[in-house]
Length: 266
Image (cartoon, rainbow, N blue to C red):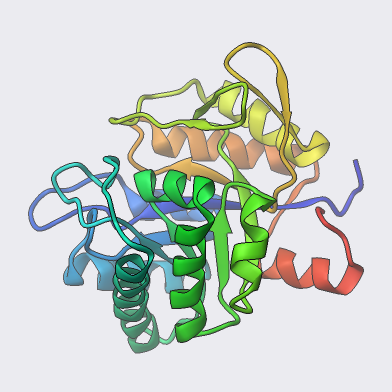
């Protein structure tokens, strides 16, 4: 492992709604480098969006729009039939809404990331990935689009948007590389998550449910803020990365470094 190995650590945030509170976003922020903030379709509301953006700006974190299917009751983790055209407009609506709060708080929007079922759908359907990429480009072509693998790159690139990829050390993987999304996020052992995150950084590999290894060439790892022990997990991951000289940097910083060096992965 090189001494300048770098990895982004991102967490989905701002997923409270009205009087219903989910997660402890600010307690997670010292351990991470990027946040993806819910935009009101699967969770979040205007006040939550503003508060989460304000806290992220104060902590110097990269901010992304966490776009989703319109599914408050199912927390965006239920598949829905949607045309690419409707998805493009839904994504544009959400990105624009979050960008308004980011601008108001003096921050900079850095990326877009689909949520839950939409994330899996975009990873499997290049037309849907292209629809989100088009919406991203219509806001700002400098925004990164965060998805599971490089398979979506042709669909994203056609709109002039750069793709970034991530691994999920607190989720299971099927042998074919698909994510085993939990309808309600379960608590994972922090040491296990930290060990998987470090292996992603050092080896570009993660274990699947059948015991096999998967290659994951990524710039980021995602931790789930709605896990019951999310803060403990984030603390353990950051400590493990720091102890092993893995620099935790924002997604945009890593992407810019890769443009400079021509490297596929730091």
